[in-house]
Length: 247
Image 1 (cartoon, rainbow, N blue to C red):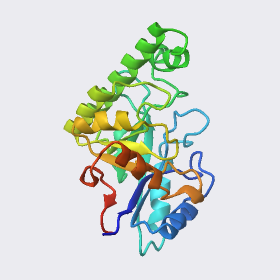
Image 2: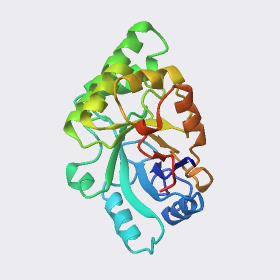
Image 3: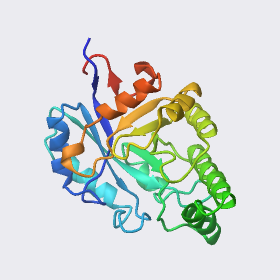
């Protein structure tokens, strides 16, 4: 029976730090044989790489609506940044409620909402390799802020959890399972280990394998994610965008 990924829910365009126009990324998704692709640029507080304004997402959505997208479903979402310890993100509800999906993730260089977040989220993650105290501080802040975000916002998936910014996997995965939020297997960075994914899987979380593509060549390039899932012993039924038969 054929096996395939039919969707890639994490793709960047020139609206943020992608290297190609939105139309080019969609064309690449078609060539990859995907049925669905989501354009999910960085929120505006991701320093140096985010969109120029939160309203840029609505502009992109209007742009996509004017195209002929026959043969592929094109979603417009956002990869919002955690910017506060109480789950604050850099996208207001009035904007993300008009989008097709909301991704949320931790990034090291963001403009935080206050000085406490600057210390616990930004500084602590920069200094986590210096001492155990800083790492524990970063771990606690990262996990707590993501847990709060899951309670406050309708998060489709957490992007690259644990990439360069440590999180308590079991605690966070259980919260994702309760919220119906997917755990991303990120092929663009390919940093995750099978034992970490297996731990998340035991908490009942669903997975989504995404490319985190910033250029057309890597859109829909998801096979390495499937290999990781297999190494972790995760069943296809636990993966949202994988099917034994092409859709």
